[in-house]
Image (cartoon, rainbow, N blue to C red):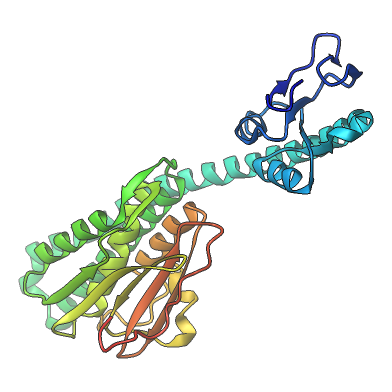
Length: 343
């Protein structure tokens, strides 16, 4: 075959490759010219059991073919080794298929468990809480005037506790849904999503003076719903913990490897930089700042569903920064102290 015509060679029913110097090879493989990188990638992902073997001319072409997804590479000058390379590649693919099947079974079990858990929390567990709160309200309305002050205080605390627990259960359901949501990649304007989150926060708290700034070009490819959850939670977190400051400052910048969202609010101690992303871990008390302790867990889930990572920096009284990347191969952006007086 002319060197100028990269092609895919498909075996014939008798298991021979007449276009590869007429050499007989097993009929359970696919041989492709190493220059056809797109075709290699397509074949590597089609789920067929036959391995993909790329014929190459040099080490650079071999690396490119393996990166594209080839199971094995072979120099054109070594075609006599093709049957052995096919057998080796087929064995590796069988091992990988078993591992994938085992992992898929584990994922199905986890997914079913999460579905049952979310359904139980949303209905079976929250219903008794609502009943407790309802009977508490009935007591207040029916016999509240005959209760002594201490009894009314206890009743108020019971109802407040049920409200807090119900809110935390709702937050836990939201986190569970984030984990199970199907991933659908598309072009997304991350800046526009952040602007919408900022606008909603302003409508909910018009008395706040929060100076919001972002870089103009923040387009990415990802799941829109997951990314909306990410910016909603990060912006809400920044607004919540900058409440004592007026004006407060919040920024979203593109950085090397990803993005950094920064505020000049209450901050947190450095020992909490890792645990702050765990559900229900809170650095501040309810009396200081309200919240359920799930927002940053939702943000981390959204980032990790994209294959990325997120980390944090904070100093008490000086603010916090959250750096994240949506690219599995990118380094995390720097989230150290801001260069100027403001984030």
